[in-house]
Every structure is written in C-alpha cells, then in structure tokens.
Length: 372
Image 1: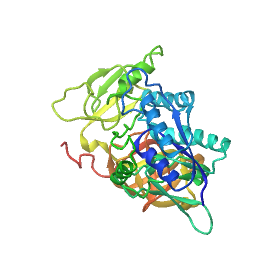
Image 2: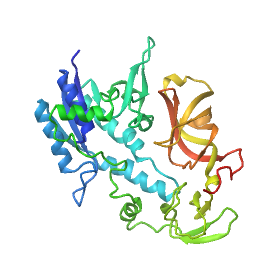
Image 3: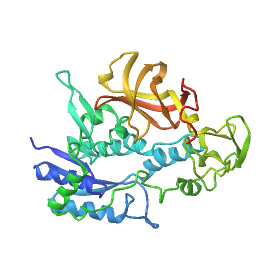
Image 4: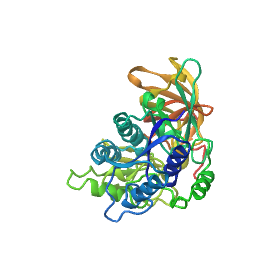
C-alpha cells in the first residue's frame, strides 16, 4: 500500500538512498532537511547542515519528483544538544550527543512536521530495523543487518510512539549495497564521505568547540591530577578536558602508561591509573527507558552495550525506583564513562537502556589487565 512518507534527509548517501527507494516504490514522499547548526564559517563536506548538503538532498528530490523543504531547528538543537554537550563535559561526564539528538531533536521535530503535512510514516537513513512484535501489537527495534553500521544503540531513547510510525529502509542493506544503489540510480552523492559522529565539532578535538561555546561563562575550577594513591602528578584548568579511558593529552609524564580512571568535577580532581584500574563490574543508570519486550520484571537478563563500538557483555539489570537501575555486569568492562548510554539487547532486539550515572568497581583484582 502506497503511503505518504516524510523522509529526514541530511544530504548524505544513506538518507538519499532511503528517500529514493521509497519514491521508486511509489510512496508519496516528502523530503525534509533539518538546519541544526550553522557551518557557514569554514564548514566541511563531512559535516551536516552545509549548503552543499542541502543542495545534494534537493537534487535527489528533483530527480525523483518529490517536494523538499528545509526546517530550521537551530534553537532546539542548541538548547537540547549543544548546551547539554557542554554541561556534561564541565560536570566530568562524557556526553552522547547523537543519542540525545535523535530522541530530543530529530524524531520529535520531524514527527511534528509529519502530522502537519499529513504523512503517516517518518523515514530516516538509520541503519536499524523495525518488525511487528506479534498479535499483541507494537514493533520491535532490531540491529541492522550490517553490524558494522548498526545504529540501534543511538535510537534506544526515542519515544515508543515515534518508532511506531518510523521506517528504516536501509536496515536490511549493507553500506556497500547502499552505495551500489546510489550509483545505479545516478545519485551525485554516491561517493560522498560518511559524516562524522559529532557533526558540530570540526576535527577530532572537542575542546576547541567547548572553548568557543563557553566564552564569557565563568571559568571552570582548576584542580589536581593525581594517581590512585593521591600523589599529585600535575594540575589542570578544568575537568572538561578529560574523559574516562583517555590516555593522551592529560598533560602528565609519569614514565608509564596512565589513563584517566575518574573525573570528579566537584573537587576538581582527575585520577590517573593503569589499564587494569579501568575495569568496571557494574553500573548505576538514570532515566531508564524500557521497551515493551522487557516487560514489567524487576530484574531481567540482557546483553549490555556501554558505548557505540562496544560488543556488549552479558548482564543482569535490576530496576529501581524513579527510573533508575543497577546493572550487574557478568564480565568486567574497561573504560566505562559516566554520561554515556548503556543499551540493553536480547539477541538483535533492543530492550531499552539508560544513561550511566556512575560505574561500580569490578570484583576482580584491578591489575588483572596489567599495565600494557
């Protein structure tokens, strides 16, 4: 059955192919790009929201004969993603802007527009899958076929009713197949480079962005960089320059490899340790969102993924009051950062997830991984 579908288009190859596939299938497609961040000052092709990106999206719309619009959401993005990004780092946590943006900006903004335009379905170029849950209704959120590109981790916090109306046309395709489709359809973006994970940060150093964003704000509290026994290794001008697991750029020379193992913003203390000191045996999560398959059980088993490229480990999740949970990791994990998302899986299916408030020490000797 042909339906009216609003497609979120970034101008990249993924969303372009998603829109083209839907149009070719006979759906009444409306293409929409979200203007989230102004890259007019030196923006590059690997960043979203550039004029070139919108031109690429418009070319796809013209080639397949569907309308295309640009919706300005810079204020919402600034408030819900950029301010959050800065505050998390200044609070000693490591933010996850992609998951926040999906839940708080992209899907909500596009869903509102879909209602206004009479679109029944909201489609994006995410690599994930949705399937009917069965006779009881609802839909299951699953990993993509291409596990190297799977983005279900970033979708765990999207409202259930929004995913009920969503479509991910690329979920069963590999990246190579998507580029082949783009070439076969003659899309100019077929060879376009993939976008970066943090679309608003130029280069690989987020600290320059923080410095620009916080100009005029009160300076961060300076503090000490210490080892596990409390010995002072150096000083710093603010905890926002540190994240758990970081090895380079800490500004200390100790004659051995040291990693950031704790960032304590209230005291201004940054603790360095050896690789084994990064081992974590459990998590305390806040703002937990469970999908229907998790049921109402107080405790359940799942595989928990603690960062985007993490393979996941078996765990036992114990739900607590006010949307919190304690996660018992059955295998220790190194380098868990407060502020990141912990997502629950049962096989390929997303059961839910939450935001890491703090990590709990592993029950194995902390030097188990050695100093290498």
